[in-house]
Image (cartoon, rainbow, N blue to C red; front, side, top):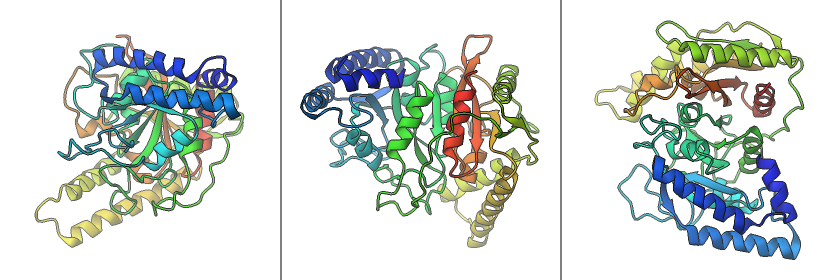
Length: 401
């Protein structure tokens, strides 16, 4: 899907202007149903597309994403577009792109719009249901077929949960893989050790292409080391695959549990081999995350010793995760307990299955895995070892069956 469109754009079989026009129309229609978009600038998007068409005629494709329409979450700066973040600065219009946006544009992508965070973004399949958050608008836009690729950010699951509920692909890269420069509000490895910028897409190709463009140091985000992104292997033969489901009070609904087993079976059928998962981690992840939230909220009376203990517990958790993942290449597990609920405020417990990877700094990828009895999408989460994002991309392809 994504690569086919890019090939047609690169050869001139379809113009960037025509493609942008078509996707803007889709996005406006989707926004009318879902409230996915917080800011359009059609004139600018069409002007950018026209420049790409002229460049193609003069010297060929601008880059690997030449002419691809993309959307961007409204916490990631796009020059000229409004970006209030979590503040009341609704007149804020950044004068430069976030690093990830600059890299997408440098590769030839066209930014169509900024998408809404949280709020009552409706599910693209059923407007009475929520698509989750906080990368809500991105998931709705991709799920509605209005965008093939978008950028979101994920602290405890804010890419993965909406991706699972909307039936799209979503990737939280390894911590430190992608610069957060230009995320608003500002985030950093020391002040916010969980949040990562990553892609949501209509297919695995979209995730892979986006990650190949946005990954790597930018000389501004000190939390991004120069670790090369390796190409995804051609298959999963020999990979060690473990499966985990619910723990204690946190149990997936039957449709999710079945989807997890089906994805694991597809990986094994493609040549992976089964290994056990030895670390029950949901309770620890939930406890540590609750401590993180109290620190972030500045709870009165939290002592320095209590903060030190919370950080020590987090360090211990990361060590245990590394030890457990030393025996596993891909962990297959739920992304959420069930499919998208009716419109309501989200609860922290909605994210319990996505919290461990965030705390571990591990890459995690959600793949669409069918639908439940109500016809709603079900997603399955693949978790890998830090810096092995490429392995998850290969596993996601094999999970398609």
